Amino acid sequence: VQLVESGGGLVQPGGSLRLSCAASGFTFSSYVMRWYRQAPGKERELVARISIAGRDTYYLDSVKDRFTASRDNAKNTVYLQMNSLKPEDTAVYYCNARDVNNRYDYWGQGTQVTVSS
Image 1: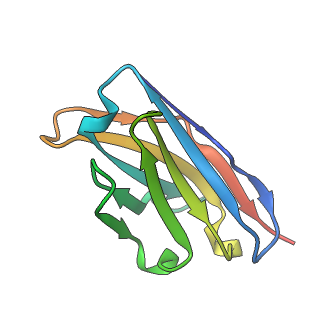
Image 2: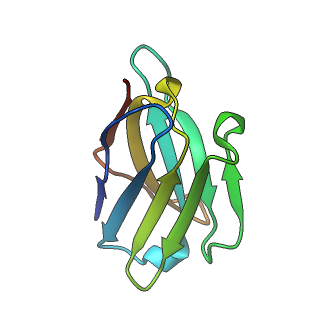
């Protein structure tokens, strides 16, 4: 099982990044996908969640209207489009896969997002 995030980096405030998470080794289309983030000295928090078919989403209040989660089940990939980035969005972003019965829980290695001028 692998979840491999990419797309992180350094961006100026107001800029955009698109994170990708490529999955392998499990039936991606049967898993709810989540994006978490963890800033230095803070607890990991749920940023976004997307349902199996991609029709239902959840967002942390502070990222609503700025971040959009999507998925391509044919490509076994989930995305997080991040617009209007703020310094407080700086964190390591993690991709998570969990089956609908909460029996299996997989994590990526994380990708650093730094928002700074």
